[in-house]
Structures are given as C-alpha cells and as structure tokens.
Amino acid sequence: MQNTLKKYFALFALPGLLAFTMAFVVPFIMGIVLSFTQFTTVTNASWVGLENYIRAFQTPDFLNSLWFTVKFVIVSVLTINILSFFLSLLLTRSIPGTNGFRTIFFLPNLIGGIVLGYIWQMILNGVLQPYGVTLTSNPTYGFWGLVILMTWQMTGYMMVIYVAGIQNIPRELLEAAEVDGAGRWQTIKNIIIPAIMPSVTICLFLTVTNGFKLFDQNLALTAGAPSKQTEMLALNIYNTFYGRAGWFGVGQAKAVLFFILVAAIALIQLQITRKREVEQ
Image (cartoon, rainbow, N blue to C red; front, side, top):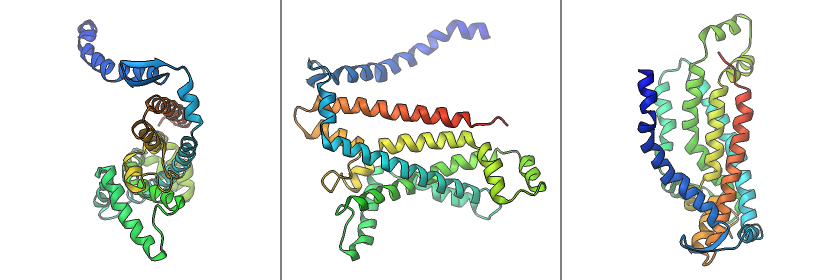
C-alpha cells in the first residue's frame, strides 16, 4: 500500500500544485516584479528600479499608517488574548450554561467586517454624541474604536482555541498541583500557561496577522479620518493603488513591503513561542 501511494503521489499532488502555482506563486512573483516598474497594466510596464520604494517612504501617509498599525496591533493583541484567556478559564469551570456562553462569544466572528464596522460606528458615535465629538473628530477616538471592534470580534474565536488547550491539560496534573497546595494564580502561571503554549502560539499568530491585515473594519469605521490619521497599512495601500493616478507601482511596492513586514514579525513570533511549548 505504501509503495502504491509513493508511486502515484506525484499524479495526485499535481492538480493541487498546479492550482497553487497558478493562483498564488505566479501572481506573487508578478507582483514583486511590478513593484520595480511603472505600469498601467501587467503587459504595459517600464522598469524604474527602486524608485517606487523610495517614493513610498517619502510619503508621510505611509509612515503614519505604519506607526498607527503597529500601535494598533500591539494593543489589540494584548486585549484580545488576555480577555479570551480569562474567559476560557471561566468557561472551562463547572458553571451551568458554559456551552451557550461559548456560542454567544463566538458569534461576532461570523459577522462580516464591513457590517461590524458600520454597526460599531453607530454605537460609538451614539456614545460620544453627548460630548459633542465623533469617532472621526480625533484620531484617538478612532484608534480605540478600532481596538474595541477588533477585540469584540476576535475574542470569542481565540477563546475557543484557549478552551481546547485547557481541556487537553491532564486532570492528574491539576489535581497534583492542588494537593501540593498551589493557589489559583500559581496553577495558572506554572501549570496552565506552559501547558497551553501551542494554543498561545496559534492565537498570537492569528491576532498579529489579522491585526496587520485589518481592512474592512478600518474602511467602515473611520475610512482613515480625520486626515488619514487612522488609516491602517492595508487601507493606505488600497488608497494608493486606486486613489491616485499613476501610483500603481508605488502601491505595489507598499504591498511588497507590507508582506515582508507581516511575514517577518509572524515568523519571529512563531519562533519565540514555539520554544516555550512543552510536550505533555
């Protein structure tokens, strides 16, 4: 059986490899090449070298978006993971209705980003209205609006992953800690967190990458207002590409830089957290 599988492996893998090459590898390579050109279509491009990258960094909006996105990712990763971890601790105890609460907390993740953005725009503007301000009257309000929206949407999803990790901890381990007189905080710190590090790795990876890639919610909630001060990287790339004539190459260069940044941070995070995982 093993020999037969090995014999036909290439045949079965070929359709998938072809689809992956056509749908991902070829457009990805073309995108990198186009970032070094001035183009209107993929067949009408002239080589300009690093000019697009230089123009990207000379644009104040891009650097502002980069800094705004980094701040947003740091804060949202912390709020989402801390909140979802403590919710998972609460919902793995013997409390009536835990399955119902898990479902309720997970539901926001099923709503589309654009819809969520407009819903939270109405809610937060309604809260701010008595004070004579709106989400877009000050970038600070827009920043925290995005953090609240992202935390509300992603917490339930991360909570499910943490719940799965906590439920996989051997019962004997927790009972032994209890017998040894470990308090609740000592159990969390020395038993639960080390045991669920694979879940932590996954949750950090998802929240970091989703935070950097946030687009729909940013577009619907603030659209970058006021004066592009709440514009995140993905929205900035979109506006460069479709909002300025003759800037396709710069937009493409920004997209390549965006990919390198997210890939590098995600790989470093995976490397760091995987080293802390323990085998049970």
